[in-house]
Length: 159
Length: 159
Image 1 (tube, each protein chain N blue to C red):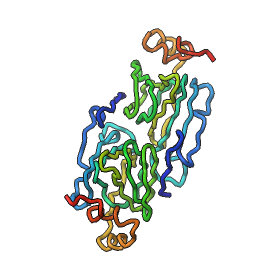
Image 2: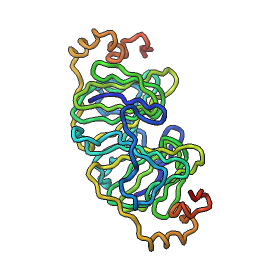
Image 3: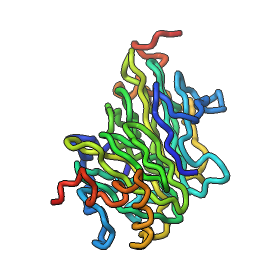
């Protein structure tokens, strides 16, 4: 099973592009997922390596969980919410997301895609989504309002 | 422990640069190691994310082991030996190295550094080095001679 998967035209040879999440009640937009390693029963590794691509206007689910994320940006310009901070990130920045840290990734560019590797334990808990009440509370902080509710922000196209 | 480590001037904030391997009998050259995740007892993840930088003229140890490598190139132009194939690799190529595959990474550039992420299980076996007899046998293949014994190759500076 040793081999090279070449990166070409924004994807890897023989790695499929998948929907981000199966559950439509998680709020997200313009995001796709590739699993680079750890997806099959033959593989004996204890981790998964995923790649997420967020197109302009897009963002990941606002969530928290016990398991940790190790993220490395490869493409574009984005930002990450880490609990109560919004931090701009760019290629090859490393983002550590520890247990139960509220987080969301968002593309900051209106023209370029934003892509990042995310390594996680293969055995892990399911993400939890904040309640509507918690989201309303977070939106009271002007620094967090846009990333917590991107569709309601001035930059939103309202599509 | 959630935070961003910015990538600047070829390294990450608050991540130290270390020697590649402690054991000088493993043959390698001009290579350094950074551990981006999974190095401390507080971290609960089951994997390690390392970054290896190989300067011009450099190469990693020729080795094989039970545990798997998931490698993603970030910088430069290199090549990888996978058992009996030598494959050129460049940014963001993905290299899967399965159990017991003989492998070595080598920088192909005489001016630029070559760098790659390597994700492994945190609990893993120690690498094994081929015997002198096996190396002599491999060198009989003209395609493998240079990467199996880089110091003996025409491109070597003989330093």
